[in-house]
Figure (spheres, rainbow, N blue to C red):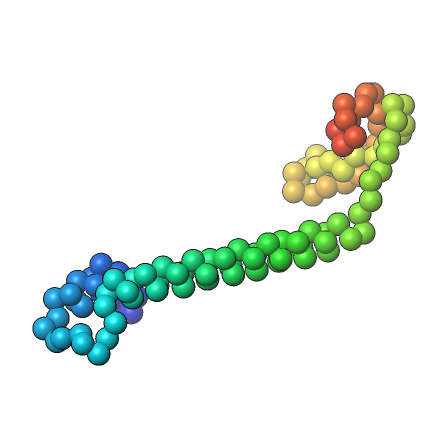
Amino acid sequence: MVNRRLPRGPIEFWKDILESSKPMDDEIPVFQYLSDLRERLSTALNIANASSDAAAARARYYKNKNSHMRHFEVGDKVLLLLPTNHNKLLLTWRGPYFVLRKVSEVIMK
């Protein structure tokens, strides 16, 4: 409900147009309008998707701007960022821990 009124959906809108007693000689036919609307919505969707992709690429660039890959080998000492004992929302660096095995370039156990 918007401003104490129910919003009119597309079905009510087209029902009113089709049931109106006024001739629509000076207006475009409903099927032509719907066809044009579909094309405009498709174009708008393509523009929105392109804009979203560009924004995601910018965010990815700024997130990864100062990051770099770190290489660890089995036996290396590392620090882990873990939750504190009294508050799981607070993190502290703990360690040193030893790398026991290397599962992949980004996962170690």
